[in-house]
Image (cartoon, rainbow, N blue to C red; front, side, top):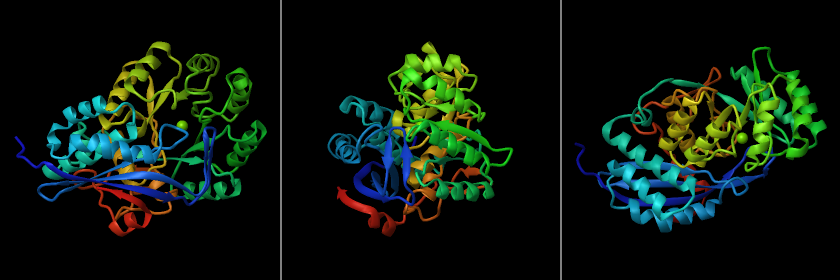
Amino acid sequence: MMDSDPILSMTLHLVDWPLRMKRRHGVGDVERSLPGVVVELRSRDGLTGWGEAAPWSVFSGTAEGCAQALHVYLRPLFEGAEPRDLPRLMRAADRALFGHPEAKAAIEMAVMDLIGKRCGLRVADLLGGVFRPTIPLSVSIANPDFAEDLDFAREQIARGVRLFKVKTGFASHAEDLGRLEGLRGVLPADAILRIDYNQGLDPWDALPKLRDIEAFDPGFIEQPVPRDRRDAMAEIACALDTPLLADESVFTPAEAVELVRARFADCVSIKLMKCGSMRRAQEIAAITEAAGIAAYGGTMYEGGIAIAAGIHTVCATPNICLGAEFYTANYVMGVDILTAPIRLDNGQSHLPEGPGLGIEVERAALASITRQVLA
Ligand SMILES: [Mg+2]
């Protein structure tokens, strides 16, 4: 049995990520910066565990609320606790605090980082072992300046990326079709184009628009209608030949059970920031796998810590087989707080080496984006 190494302290860094590019989505826009939270745990033996929350106010919650949730409600549970008690601690976190999946995901990844560092195992090993050491990388086309996005796409093609997700539903249908036409002219024949509406269509006239989109032969169409319109999702899934993917409609394992029951999509996007834990992500993957529903590795606006946790999760989870969008820390966030960037090459995200999350944080970079420290 592992000897005792309790968590001595939790430090919260409320940060403002500058962004390198503007982003548009059916659910809302991101212009210059976006707040987030970095969690730093210290154990008695001097180990540091890192976690990150990436809330987005229009999608799930706020960074300010997330920092307070960690500070006021989760701190008393985790300070003084043993990392190896993580399953019980996460249950206690659910009892103490409704919702706030980003806060719970962040604290879980920080504790898993500590456990891995202490016993010399990667987080992916702690999650059951490595099924795939690399993950096909998907990048999203979401810049309102489409010329800039075409340059970004060309750059990514040169780096071996073959999965492209186009964000639609933030402008007119005609503009969406025009952007797809433009992108088709740039993509190589072996590229796979996918579409993500981020809930941007009204259910009553979604279908004719989606039929136009189908002419571009997308690999899947993601979340065309609002998250609660699962009835409309089910009708669309039946009406289209293209696989329909649920993102905002499925946050939790319980919602994954609803997906299996009502069959309102053919595949699902799993995000740590939606379900609140790597273990829960694996639960969703297992529930959907048993029903023949494939999963995709989704992200929010995440820096390198959360991206690393996502990579460990997808590498350890066979059913998350549709690739993953682990590009934000490298290409979207204006500051990389890791000492070494996440390795992306040949169109793949690579599992970081080293114990725990396999990353280290550059303190000066973290300080440069920190708005407030809660200790
Ligand atoms: Mg999405």
